View 1 (tube, one colour):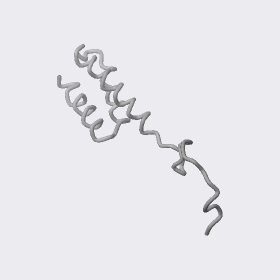
View 2 (cartoon, one colour):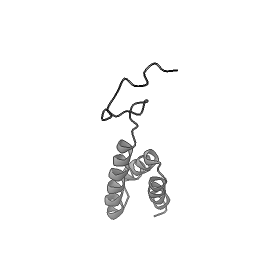
View 3 (cartoon, helix red, strand yellow):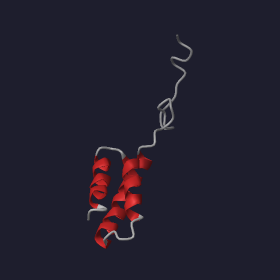
View 4 (tube, helix red, strand yellow):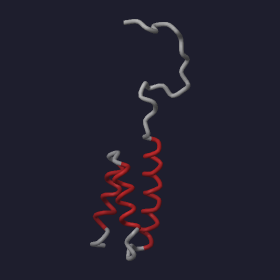
Length: 80
């Protein structure tokens, strides 16, 4: 418990504050521990999957904000 408890809680906390990359990193560190109890290991695998899913969802679109679904018109082109 002393080796993994705080890191397990940290992995959950950083997920909920939106730092998904830190959550994945903490989960990876936990999963590398050979003495991690099996119930905690299973939950860590699930937590990691949630964090990875959020990381992919958080990838921004193009810099102009378009995602390929908007209609385009010539109105306003080249206006200062």
